[in-house]
Image (cartoon, rainbow, N blue to C red; front, side):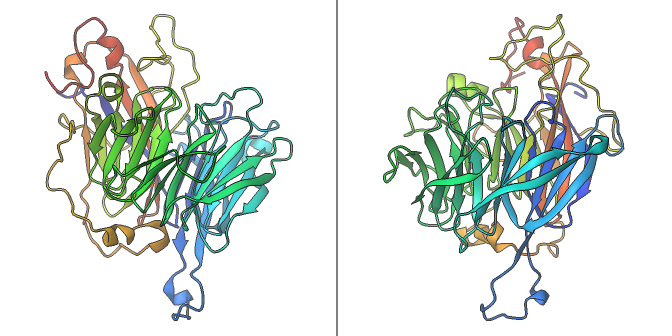
Length: 477
């Protein structure tokens, strides 16, 4: 079956981030989509902390990296253009639109603040990120997550520019951004969860609505015009809810992930029952919808690496989510993952059909990114369909919390605890054409302090199967 798989995953580059990496974000703004930011987090080593009685607070170190991607540099396509030492970075997001002509990156840090950095273009096509504003929310807690209200990349006229943030005390914070000065203004703060509020996210289609997930196992919705009582509370997840993303492509679609090792897909008009539930064998720290392929979802699954999920059948027919690709790395926890926006703004060639509601087709000159010394990664067919492959690792809440960001511990002594493997969905029944689609993605991980750049090359199965009766997402051959 060689060559007939849904995707080929290649490592293009491995970067040592020195400190443990937990957040990676590709710039979505056109003209700057070759830029990649990576944030790190690490507790200061005990030998540097003589006070063991708790009188001296732990110091959380951080560093922000900025990389520039070049398809022409096949040996090292990512070039580091800046590094900034700072308070530990727990989360970060690029604003999807320029603000007063500038590209902005927002940071949620261990100092309990939200900071904005402005991208500045230097000589020789280089760039730097410079602080432009910061707002301290609570110095006695960690800012754990942040999201911009611009996730759809298109705003209704007069819609304000907003940020939602969550913290380690279970609070949410709504901020307004002055588009002239990029100054931050606190609009409201409120208690949302009994323990850590791991994640907060906007409904990109109705930005008065926000969602939050906490270590109290609750997923909650809030109307920021009427704060005080949540619009809904779901107890469907059995452990802490730590990832949420509203679909930028389809209204009412919401993805959530948890330490219970499940990804749930929701129609927000009926929050009583999810559209689909897929086990991923790892706590789901981040979820990212693909910029173009509306049904593809990237999941950072901590000790179980990362997975690429096809949610099309779940959304359209309430069937199961299919795992297209699964990659596990030894001695690491994958916390950050993101799709690149590169190549996605290019026009398709006239000879190919293009349906924005479909999987999409991109131009043929998207570069084959001729890299690497490592062979492509293939494997036999893999679907989840609510089946857990092999015995699932049993984790108590205490064990899982030991791996959480505020409680980082050294795992370097645990040799070969995790096996490295990749599983890729077989679509041999759809072969018969030579059109391919390249997606770049990046992941970053704890303990091995590594940033990975990947190329995921997929056969345009959806287009090739048109009219042939074959079914993307079906396991039957």
